[in-house]
Image 1 (cartoon, rainbow, N blue to C red):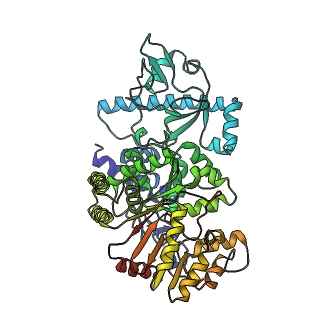
Image 2 (image 1 turned 90 degrees about the vertical axis):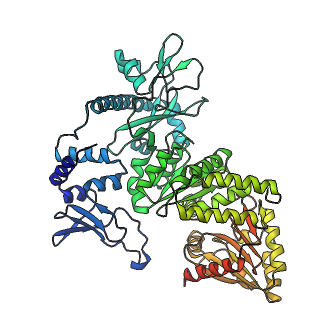
Image 3 (image 1 turned 30 degrees about the vertical axis):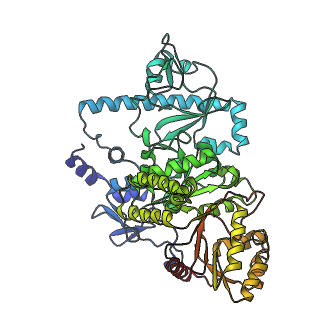
Length: 598
């Protein structure tokens, strides 16, 4: 516990204007200083998109305050919020800035601190060696270049290479090899004979750093086939190899367990955009940075996410978008991430899921033509956690028999029991009960979606609503949709189509057709008699038929492809109970509130 009197003296000695002004541009107004708040995003429709100087720093009160997002506190709070660090580290940083003695601590804490500093020093020495080794490894350089990683990006992230060989680090640490490298998790001691050897061999090295640029751990990606694919210095006292005993894990830096790759590089972009993209592994982070997307992080060891990682992200941003490929590994990581997040949910945070098509990684998507725009559209259409939760349960169990429903309820109850947010928990529980009680139908392919849409339009009595964020010519010509719409309209059925104006603007920019209907799709729908409505920032995929059926899922009704690079696995759930009339009314109200005149 740091004494209160020490903190008060530290804050009194700190120039809050000078310290915050080094990271945020401030302008003096009277006795206070104002600037653009670093803690909230850039979208402010009420002020025309211009970010006001709502961030005030008062030297007299020794505090900062934002009148938009209500961020508030002392310079220590600023470090915690802006850099995502813990309170003790923030106090240490401030002490160093003002030239004060470090915070007083008990004797045993001082000993542990000295040991942690020794571990950090060993990790830094090893990283320096690995960075030098990368320059002389054609194979590692070729691997990075093949993935589209430039030398500039590799240098920014301090990427290195651990050469093949059992004791390369012995030449670096000399007679301190065993002592330093086993304590830092850089070396392993064999259980048979006590031989010491390097833990990371023939691997590209990814360091995780804290806000002070201190190395917290090193992760290695196998250059050739090795198990596991990713290996980390901060693994616990165990090994996947029989007959091997490791000494690492007890003296690592206290921040290491919550460290993430790319966190320090993502910091400013994450604060500005008010969300972070969580990807599967370190290479995804590098490839997205190459594509100009910087608010991105990954777990240091691919696929091994911890609650501490999520907690750290939520200290920095209110929104996490999980972006994983549609592989078995990606699906498992998405579901496990949701399970980790559930106990941490509050009304102040949100989590969304963007599952990429065709087993593509984010880097693969970016390398496609117009890849950055496509990736942004995937982020915009990411599923809220609640929808991902319900769709995941619905896809795991058969809902047309009692046994399947019982298994679903048992699984859902176990997950909901981990939650502490009462309102969110109650709403999810209610949605699960509706899911089980509903007369559900699961659509699991493009053909199933197409067949269902054909049949419901043909059978509709008065009205069909279709919400599809993106409309393409190929999407409406998977079958004779316009002909079916025209026949329905001829017998008096109203067909209303809602699409996102931002997606439409993007399509117009990409195709530069010079007309409102980018590739003729929108014009064809209008010619068939459909009513077309443009709305702002609505990315749901929904069909409502009269008041008898409601379909919600991931299927882009008017743009999905049957083949090619845009094909993806789509799942939707058809509801035939649950007060569809009320939900239809609410949906129309939402569309009305987001209507665009563009």
